[in-house]
Each structure stands twice: as structure tokens, then as C-alpha cells.
Length: 304
Image (cartoon, rainbow, N blue to C red; front, side, top):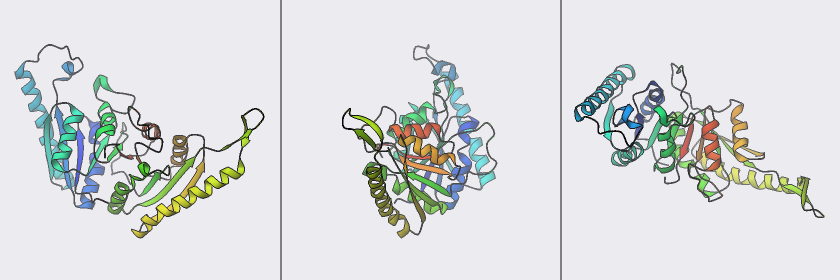
């Protein structure tokens, strides 16, 4: 369980990206960590959308870089004044996900906090293309916040954390980051395992004719025993933890159904699971949860 010593907020100059700052400032203050903000310089937006655009005048590009640096300088001054925190700011250059990944490695960053929105014509639904790529490649956890048109005046509370597990070592990889975050915010945890109901098959036709009650109960007992064993790790660290097992068609839907009650402030999960099949974006369950959950999501990319 690695302590939080350095937290990075990627920015793109938009108010939406800045919505990650209040939570980051709150966690930095609680953890005694270093706050970093980074922006990746790109060519002016009207040129960025097309790889076949004509060469940009160096003077115009330098002016655009100057504006980006001024934006960072102003933001740093504002954070120092409003949050009374020191901030390390960096204006990077290059392909955005790659530049951020290099910066994370160079600064030994422990956690990235960012909003999940797109930039310009590259937006994909509400999940930004940069966040999408970082979820595949970044070697550290990412705490993603869905931005709103009217940001909350105070930091989001993260006191109640839901952790879905699929009984695989892959899904358990999120436990370390979740515990590290939980120590900072004194969280309460709920461990959740969702399994597909086991059908009863008609031997004459080979078709399901209902639910096999006995097998489902055995699956539930095994799942409860598994979660109880994992919960011991949390209890030894002094955390409050409860365990839930549910039978629902589709693990992602089971997680979303649990979140729908509004009883959790954060869901934490690894972005690949027991199937061993890595999707082009992220694990199928994590993909659906990240895109549909209204609360913040802590994800651990496959390369972490």
C-alpha cells in the first residue's frame, strides 16, 4: 500500500478540467502530498484537428505557448491564494497521453485526478479521448470525475467507497490504491461480488428452464467466504468494511444497480478482470461503469 506523496491534475485550459482541482487540493492537504498540474502544449486548436494542416507560423505557435504558460501561472497563483497550497506546474510538449505518462514517471507521481471530458472535435461521448487513452497505459491509479455544468462549491466527499471484485487476482490489484486513498480520507468500504445466476438446463433439449437454486446458493456461499477473507485485510488496517454478494445478469449492471442507490461516493476497480481478455479500451465491466457511473471512479490501468 503506497502512500500518496504526489498528485497530478492534467489541465487543458477549460473550466471542466479545473473541476478536478478542489478534490485534488483537499487530498493533497490531508496527505501532506505535493500538488502538480500539467498542460501539454499543442498547436493552435484550428490546426490540431487535421494532420494535413499547413505548417503553423512559428510566431503564432510561440504566442499560443505564451498564452498557455500565462494560464498556468495564473492558475498557480489562484490555487496558492484560495487553497494556501504550493503547486508545481509544468507546460509539456508532445502527444498528450504520452507526454503526461512521461511526466508521471519523471516526477514519481502516485495518483492522477482528472475530469472525463473531451476536447474539441475529439470528444467521445462524455469520456474524453485523453482520459480514454490514459486508462489503458498509465502505470498508476487514475481518479476520474465526471464534470458538471455547475461545479460544486466544495470538494466532493469520498467517504464511502465501493470495490467490485470478480474473485481474480487482477481485480484485487485495486485494493492497494483504495487502501492508500482510504487512509487519507478515513473511508468506509463495501466489497461487492456480482455473479450471473446459474441456469437449470432441461437435459432433453439442452435449454435453460429456470435457475438452479442449489448451485446458486453454493456460488453465493463461496463468494461470501471469498469477500470475508478479503475484508480481513481491511479490518487489520482499522477500516470499517461490509461485504455484499448479488446475482445479476451482467456484472457491470450489478455494480451500477448498487451505485444507483446513492449510498457510495466512489467506486474503485481495476480495468481488467478474470476473463483475461483485454479490450481495446479497458475491461468490459470497468468500461461500462466508468461511462455510466455518476460518482467519481478510481481505476487501475492494466499496465499499473
